[in-house]
Length: 64
Image: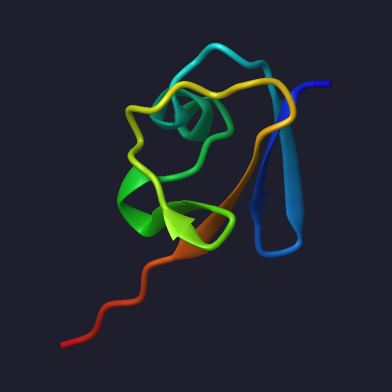
């Protein structure tokens, strides 16, 4: 079972063993626009994905 990234209503299957940062880039998502969470907890983009991981990406909103 591969790892999964979820952004809004989009799901991306990625292989385990790569960093969250690399997986986000492979999916074509802008790194500066999201925060990675696992089970509601913020996780580092440098963590390696494990089989079955579900990473929810939260869109970052900024204003000025």
